[in-house]
Length: 356
Ligand code: SAH
Image 1 (cartoon, helix red, strand yellow):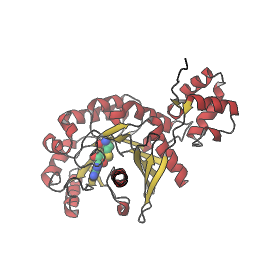
Image 2 (cartoon, rainbow, N blue to C red):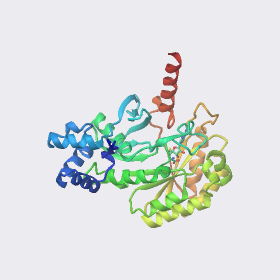
Image 3 (cartoon, rainbow, N blue to C red):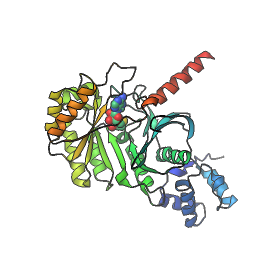
Image 4 (cartoon, helix red, strand yellow):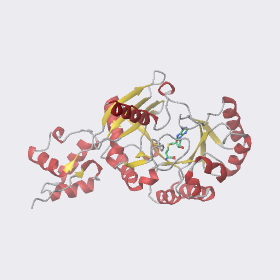
């Protein structure tokens, strides 16, 4: 009887695992280093590009492994600041989006960690159709690899702030973080990597134990549980006091200052009473607040706070000793909140199918 062997995802393997795999194929472990270099430094998309391997070894690799390579299907380029939004197709037909932004300190990529999301935040487009599936480590890596190849520019910063909740795909995200910062790969400094979470307490505590130097960003969005529950269903599961305790623990363990994201929604969380409560809540915490004027999505009727409300909110926090920045809107002309490019692509595709 013929046994059907399932192929393994070669790009998601750590170097040590690849060495083991190469040894079990009867080859020398140093070949694994060469393969790893092709995958994670030279960023090839096909086994046949690995020109220092014998044809025989390439054949064996193809038999036992598949090689994840995202297919770019769309890109929107901002005429204002050069920001690029990429839409990639995965091997199973799902699509995800990633954003490339140029800053004076280098190029930053915002990657997705899941196809869709099941957290249900009320203002977010990524979660409207729920979660399709987790991304593998290779699919997270390849968002950066493809973008670096397409732009021909080095990526120096990464934010895991695209679609998905990183703590809901914990093991693959950890694997990704190790591989992207590995000196056998792109070797991006962990200090230049930010993971953003809606506030899953056990995930934050576990991350604190990983001995990583990454920045943790907490999506706060409200100074109390009552308002937070109206915006984020996860607030029904974890009380704000416990989320902030987990953040304090993260700082104690890692010494890394936190980022608190606060999306300003008109008449929902942007009055001065809320600024006062926020200042009191964060007093003595090591970190800063990043105010994000909410990016309205057509499926909900949330409205962005006005310029004056944003400035007043910011000034109040500043006067009360809280470090605060207002997120600069990148790529305003190719606007669309997180997950909107993917969503509109799927809607267009749906229309085409209906028309047939
Ligand atoms: N699941 C992670 C990453 C999500 S996206 C998290 O919740 O942190 C990164 C940030 O963008 C989060 O703070 C998220 O709440 C915020 N966000 C999502 N949609 C937004 C919108 N339409 N306007 C403003 N901020 C938004």
